[in-house]
Image 1 (tube, rainbow, N blue to C red):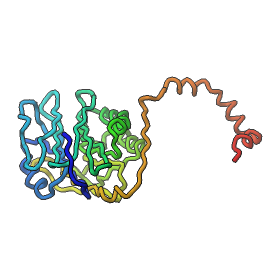
Image 2: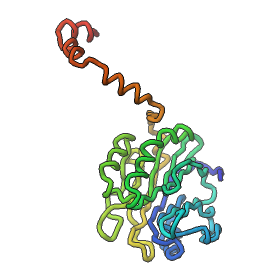
Image 3: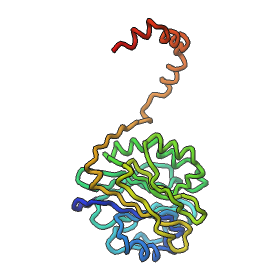
Image 4: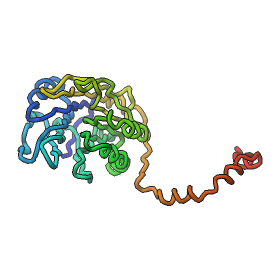
Length: 273
């Protein structure tokens, strides 16, 4: 699905762990969709399965739900829909069937694109979803010519804190959700981007029906982003010859090299202006 719309000054997203879309879609619509009219509605733990019709829960003014139902069982799952007229393309990304990730390309203006990822990381999956992102994000950004990255969903990141922080550090990302999103007081539902802090805001909206997670409203000031020059280096880690590099490091005579580099004559010859 790809459509065009006039330039817009902001992009709004509502993300929520709904703990059953059939159960809580009514409250989602009446409490949050109607009042805020977001451009993107992203839900996880939908508990949908192939027996649920594809036209289930259509919201007036929005696309049908793009779904990734859990392959086995009745829990988990992702469903995303978009405001009519929003320029968006669903991306077919190859991944293991147990991963609960969906990818989309959004056009906020004629020349500005965002790679949107919706992620649900159940505890039993360990770090698999984060490792997938760590390995593939640069390739996806380059392959689909996306300028920026937004990752939303429920990642239970406190249980894989080290891998989560490494992902943020490696890609220069920030988690803009700094408030609790769960009744336990934990923050489980991040909004991760490479966007400057000054153009994005996140705030909690409240629980969705019987869910124990708060919906999150994210607003991106796309007009401000248009005026700020940004640069991104895409590190294609999968194309590196790591065996060659490892062998090169192992075979290097480090002692002799360090001795040579520490001598005054060597330094003078090596570091000439």
